[in-house]
Picture (cartoon, rainbow, N blue to C red):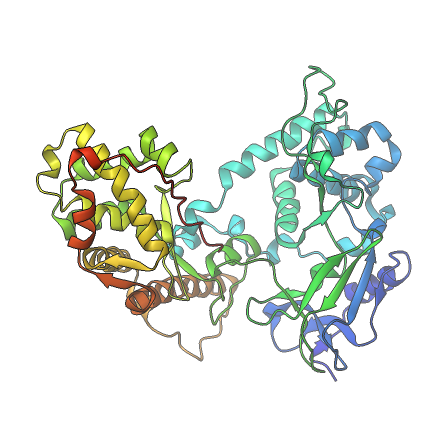
Amino acid sequence: MTNLEEDVGTSKFLDWAQTAGKLWISDKIRLGRHRSDEQQGRCIMAVESIPKGEKLFEIPRESVLNVTTTKLCEQNDEMGEILVLKLGHWEGLIIAILYELKVVKDESHWWAYFQVWPQPSAINSLMYWSEDEISHLTPSTVSSRIGREGAEAMYMRVMAHIKELGLSQLETVTWDEFVHVASIIMSYSFDMERADYESDDEELDEDMTDSASGEAVTHSTVWSDGFLKSMVPMADMLNADTHKCNANLTYSPESLIMVAVKDIAAGEQVYNIYGEFSNSEILRRYGYVEWAGSKHDCGEISLETIVAATQICMGSSRAVIDKVLDFIMNQADIRDEVLEGETLIMDSYDCYVDGQFSPELVSVLQILSCILQVPGVEQLNDKVLLSYLQNLVKRSIQNVNANEITRSCAHLCECAVDLRLRAYPSFSFREPSPNAEPQSVKELKIKMAECVLRSEVKSFQNCLLLLENEYQLVDDNSLLDKIIVPKRKIGHKKNKTTPAKRMKK
């Protein structure tokens, strides 16, 4: 007995999947709505023990919905070429789905599949939050990444493409209809490898030209990128969890196969993973949170916070800090010769829940904490400052990569994190009440926002706790003495140092 209940939509979807959809589904799993946890929605449970490596279900490529399988392509070869060769992944798939929903309607091959898609009222991704609801996410930077302006620009492009393609039936598509389809794609789509893709396809094909201008198409397309943004029936019914992932979607030339990557006991839910995302990003994209925190949680420290912390801890003026940062970003001797084009100065930096700082963040703090101790740094002429920074940037990156920082750098790290933590409300530092079940959608959103803030605070706190475990602290003079050297020695070494690669979220 599983903790699932069937509904009409699920039953019709399964009937379609195993007949017209030609899906193979193991007898060891069941799809249904979770009985005791409404937020789980539809999910897949194991009804028998499943060993690692066993196939759970298989979907033929022709039953996957993308720009190559849509009725729009079947009816018009030229239209298919445009969707594959000319349009971007998102625009093409949005138009293809809108055509199936609004033109083909219940004659669509995927009609039963559409009926189990969530309605707008059931979607909690941040595009559906009001300004008041979003305010509960302050001071998380996720509120700046919602992407409304980008979505509005895409809507205008989609409507322009619809007009250019002569799809008069879709010219009345509303903003709300667009957002619903785009949100479904954001939450449930997979990037499916093209079965016929070869590396040579990365080169622009001579036939890939704009029919109006005759110019080569150089933006991201299905053909140039080698994958199809696709809606995959059954695969998108799995919930995701960064801690509990026990299944993974694999690809073959003929089909897509969901395989157990761990042993799954009878009665356990089958989980996929959407990516190495923090709770804030999971909420933004998918409209839920992992209440115990994501395995990949992080908090962000802005460059502005770093500058403010440096002013406080080092007693330096804003002008000299800005000058140092500008030199690192824009002086070719540093940007091209030392950093080899890699980015060191960023708008923000990550602090991870496993206690690791972004190496770029630590490198920047090491540079600032050292250069600002140079006697008379504010009076140095540009040539001397540049010479010092060339040497210092190289050595700071080397030391950080070797897990070694100066004591003043460690102090500046603590100051920057402390300044960031002061922006968070007091409840973010406490565990949530165990009995507080949300009674409405708005209350659920508020609780998810609070969960995001707690996840970020925990990430900052863990970084502070583990700072001295991650790095060996050395005396500041050990670094200062190496950069304040006679002029004849400056700039003679030609070894280049590549900055530490940014860790994945």
